[in-house]
Image 1 (cartoon, rainbow, N blue to C red):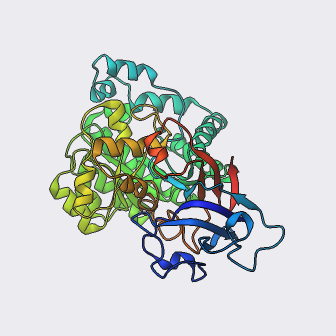
Image 2 (image 1 turned 60 degrees about the vertical axis):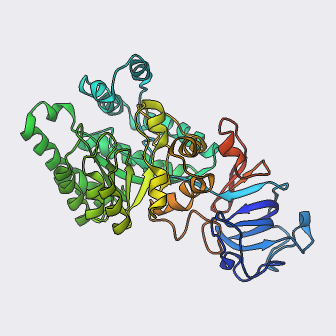
Length: 433
């Protein structure tokens, strides 16, 4: 495949001449330009599902004003004309709850009348209402509705998406959810990264039994769910929700330490509703990411930085529920590189438009548009331990790209309500548009 006539190629590899693989035409040795690594008047050659060559067309001529960057291009090569538009890396949504049954529109209305998240949860709503619906749904039904949501995410330019369990909360239903993620990986063009979130909350049947019930459920996670999921290879990550309404820091540590022994990489839902120690736990156990962080303390921030844990901002959750936004600008000022995610879920962030998440991060967390782009590309890849192969456009990386029908890369952030996605390319194949 050859993509030509690219007005602005957003490589996410700033000032790096190596993105060209040493085969640039008409380029100086300084490589790409600016914080987003922009290459003007570019073309990209793809081979064997990977970026083979990036070239500048500034001084060349040929197909659509961009000479073939490699003599290896055959007559049967698929040529895509970007028509002077923008090409960006495939977007990465690094924190979602895509697989579930049911809706929580009624809770949305209840919050509008003044009900708080904690109150809804204690009344049997919140996560547990989705748990009941998900337990009752067949695997085929879960697959069908989840595929529809995946199609929606793809239409916004998402090529890689993390998907958590956590709406089963018993052995059978948690495994059912992760099997659905596996089926999506086999049947849908997007790339799915599965996360085991059995420690999403204590299910009501255990919660009513007090401390012993909590201990029993944690034992179920560690002794029954985790070994099977690990053995079957159903999840890459293990996550835990450390919060007053879910798991204490000590309980979370028990789960994550056991997960580490089973070979899972670690994630933490941290400091979302209070400064509950989740960020400190993530740092102590060297988790890959700590997500939410609305109530991140400076102590927690320093700990995350020292442990090289990637923070994940979830602006759309606060947008829908209200309350405090995470201090994204402060994190960046202090040297952290936050990712941005939709946190798609039926209760507190029912949105799959990753451009909206990035735009809200800009307007409400006061980060720059350039940092927002990093948050949904290279930093999001880092939050999934995929930065070596995903999240930027560079020779040898996965050929995941999005062709935008606009002249400025900032247009989709500015007008997130409108789709600028012309084509989505995953592993070197057009999968949308």
